[in-house]
Image (cartoon, rainbow, N blue to C red; front, side, top):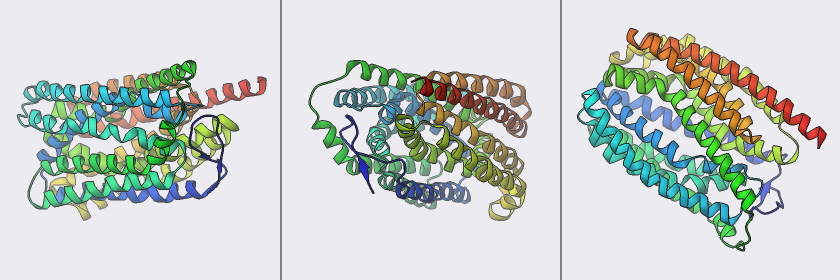
Length: 429
């Protein structure tokens, strides 16, 4: 594919008009999502509700730690108008140090949550999983370099390496009767495979950055790091908004309830998983490049149409078919998930609009707007959870659906407004 020269990144970036890599991203990532989806859907034949819920509660602490440890540096690398050697080194050093600190905090969280929930094994699970916070984050910044260069084929290879490792190890351990530890082994395999493949496939881009001279643009670096910090706050709030229901169910209703709820969420969010992956791995770097060249309106409208006429109808269809799918293909102990799947599928369809809006705002450099939206959505979700948690997982799913619809409407409106402001600034310039 063709490349154009950029002012400063040290690596080329493809022209936005080049469609080969974009088409590959659109078709490639469903393969990765299918591997992950099939693995977790399949291991329910070997796991009880309690085992699934206990592993996922420990996993939620780890995933939160990974979000906090990165602090938006990956988005700063992708979005920065000029990626200097100094900015790259600061991002790498920062995420390395904070990753270690967050791994320690994950262990502390497990030590506190274990006695509160009565789950004695939770501390052991979080302690064993904590190093994946650091390991996983070491591979994120090299992947961000590939995203900046629109090297979607290599990004796909990174993702598929992690997905294959996760699937093989998880299924093998589940077949051997490892219980909740099958997911622990799978998450380790995923983190290590992703790290090795990302650093290997991004070696040319990393070498180009190391070859730059020491001349730095302190103003540009501070702006990029400030953007990363803004996005980080939004990322943490978004994680709370996306997985806060899981925390509430696990800590409030117990591991068996979380096992059923999280598995239902997993089934309901297959399309959302694709949308999230596509937004991070394809839409954000493309929109960032559009922002540097032609503006964002056309690309945003295309993403919105894909969501409205592709992803949303797919989630509605899944909601309608939830009961026959669950009762036909899965063990009887999981059949209670069917009504939860239906509600959460509709919620996932609404959340796809949030993802498009947030990705557009990040690419536009509107980190503050993303942060505020994330805070409002989290507040709405907390209110919904407080109202529904005492009534069980079914009511929680209904509350989440209402919160997601409100969040989608707010996010779409704010993104449209900011794009109009951005277009006005461009005309003045």
